[in-house]
Image: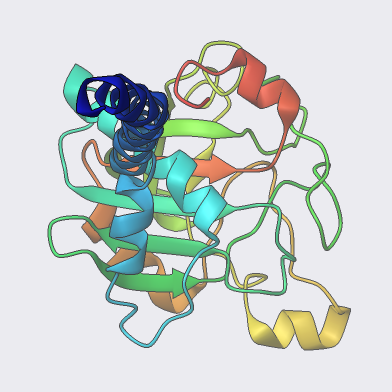
Length: 238
């Protein structure tokens, strides 16, 4: 009698065991995949969440993520050498503080400032960009900061565009960082929008010297805009 019952019991056990094993195996694979995905995709988000805002507003996560990914590539290639990242978000109103200077060694925002876009790039909002001479438009993408010089706007900082066809003519176009009196709250109050440049990311006069001294000599500058055309053409964003 016992001999007859045992096979039945054994079959009953075997009928349940494989499904439990498969379920456990599937669950483990999913958990591992989730961990790998988390580790690979949230490094920039982790840094973003750890930023010391220094009582400034934070940039948008999307613009910061693109800037940081490109910064890592440029740093590895030796095209930038400082752990300083300057981010300009041209998806925002020119009446808002849309430039950030970030120390990536301490994850601290050093400056948050108004910044102008080019005359033909748009009015209050930036809408059109160009790498062409005499376009009077801003150019998107990654730059390496260059040397300080004294020009018609006083102390200014040269820029080298690092993306061919996107901003590579920056030096030839004299697209530089400089101060301007039209980059101010008073100009906004009188004109309902910030003043515009000939393509340069112009700064408030009172912050120009400090920001230039901080970001000069091969630090990374990234000008962001949610452009599919730019993403397709750029080698530094995905």
